[in-house]
Length: 218
Image (cartoon, rainbow, N blue to C red):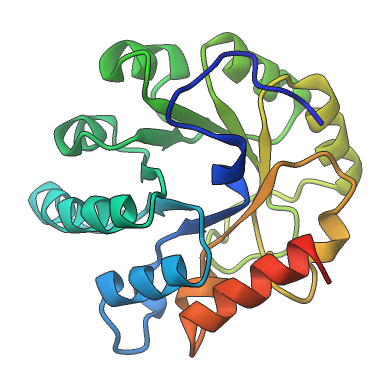
């Protein structure tokens, strides 16, 4: 399995096992905070705050509560895309898409000990992100997904190539659920990321347990 190319004191290998990504559009009447708490109780090891439609002030206010919640569970708290919000929240890190700020610029803004994740769909993108100082890669969509409808598919072969080429850990994302998580074993990934499978589930805590069990044990 690929090793870390740089030592980040916040990002342990275990933190990437089950990477939960918030999705407030699927809560079914629950609050985002209570749903995130249930997901973390169920075993999520990392929490990404991804709410693209919130105004900055609302985003930061809710982010403070989620950051405190994640800290109680010992889970790194990551902000999606918004580097300045990550700085304002003193988040553990930020996750960047290919159209977002360069990983090197984010590193310069946030500092050497913050986690920088980058989305990648090719070996070239993965190696560029690694060279710029990324700590991990999010690769997908590995299965069809309704969370990010414009996400291009990444084949199992391409996923394996990225895992073999990169020295930083890879997390698979996109349409992952208990019924297909085991298909990703042997690909070289360090963990799985999920939004809908957790935040849209009738019982988010049970869903997290089931997904983690399906990925690691069943």
